[in-house]
Structures are given as C-alpha cells and as structure tokens.
Image (cartoon, rainbow, N blue to C red):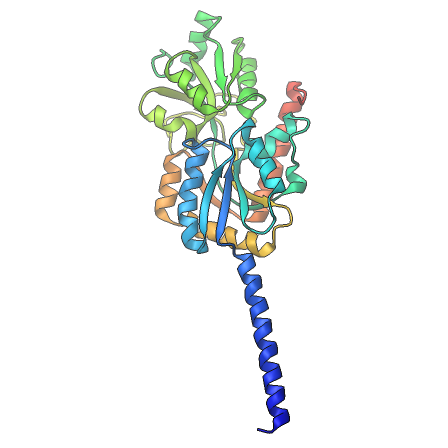
Length: 328
C-alpha cells in the first residue's frame, strides 16, 4: 500500500469511527437508562397498582430501569402539570385515566395544562367502567331495591359519594337522580380511598367510582355493586347489569387508561414504549391481573389512543354542557 493510499484509508477509518460514535451517542440518548412513569394518585390505589404491574414488565422489554413516581393531588392535575414541564427526551411519561386528560379540562377553567398541545398519546392499554355501589350491609340487593329504599327513607339516605368534584361519577349521580327522582346529593371526596373508608364504615351509604377501585371490596361483600356503565356487562362482574339495561343510556363511550408523553418527545421514544406495551399486554399473567381488577385489556396504538381520547372528550363535553355545569 502506497503512502497516499494508507493516508486515505486512515482518513476513511477515522471518519467512519467518528460517525459510529455519534450514531451510538444518538441511540444512547434515545434510550435513557431510567424511564419515569408519573401517576397522579397515591400509592396503593388502583391506578398506582396498575402502573406498577406494567412498570415491572416494561423494564424487561426496554432494558431500562422503569420507576413509578406518584404526584398525587387535584385528580391528577399535579402530575399532568409535571409532565408538561418534563424534558421531552423519552425519559418521562404519564399513566392516566380519562378524568385527568379528558374531564378536568372541561370542568376547570385553568387546569395548568392543555392535553391537545402539551401531551402526545403513546399507547392505550385498557378501558373500564364506573359503577354505583352501596354498603354491603344495606338491604338493597339491586338497583330497584336501592331506588325503593331511598324513597322510603328520604333525607340522609340519598347521599352518594364521588371521588372528586366535577367528575364523571358526580355527573352520573345527577343523571341517576333525574331518571328516578330520588333527590340524590353527590358528596365529593379527595380520591376514592377516603370515600371508600366512609362507605365501608357506613358513614355514607352509596358511592360511584370505577370498577377497579370497587372490585375487591365487592368480592369480599363489604360493598355491593348494583349497576355499571357501558354497553356490555363486565367480565369481572357478569351478574351486574349495565345502566343501559336499566334504561339509562348514553354512557356507551367508556373511560380509558393510557400513557402520554410531553409534546416534542422523539417519535423513536414513543414508538419504543408503545411497542414494549404491546408485548407486555400480550403476556397472559399481565392480562389476567388487569382483567381481575375490572379492566377490559386491549392495546391501542398512539393514533388509536388519541382518537379515543377525542371521542370521549366530545361525548362528555355534550353531557356536561347539558347539565348546566359551569367550569370553575
């Protein structure tokens, strides 16, 4: 090899080496060593439990540490605002259900975030329904029993707990009241946990909340689920009728669970987590655990989750407007 050929070989080798280092650096940046999943509710609740089930499996698929970071408060509003200001580098995501992403922007004038502009959908993984439940010691074994019981006893019996003000459960209480003329009164709590504590001690006789939050106490007989939303009965509660069966229609667009990222997050990072979610949701043990919690498990792509979020938001914007509620 001549001297000039040797020089050209060395030059090309160095250039290739530098390019390889730059490409490797780019890959490393797109694959952070730690992925954070924000949850807007306290440890131990239904959403937190779901996040930890998924995080445990996602770390195997991603090859990264996956941690759940609880930012509870204001129905997920604090966590949502945290996501908005998080680095858009594929290291921070937000696991949420419908209340924070779809409902809060409809009922709060200045929530501090705009899902349309501040978030990008990553993957959906389940739908669920809300339900009406009563304290297990009440005589009401069915919706008809509950209606008759409230009518007999009147004041005090008609108080119904809801996990947050201006939430889907609160609007559902209003619609049940309109149908049955029971003079029901929604009592707002700061989360399902304190509402459940009052239900279990019979300080409040009924509550509306999500099936995942109710299911274990229902199975234990401590509370009794009387009816669920949605167009079909739930696999976890096959003997419980839907409100549609009882004549209260218009709630076929059911709530969803999904994962979101800050706007500007690289497409590669979104696709990476979305693909990992598809593999995790195909695992029988994961599906069984989530299904047993009252979720209807089903993978949704980024586009499918975004479409469901828009449809759900539109449905509830009409319901909330028709109720006369004014954003606070």
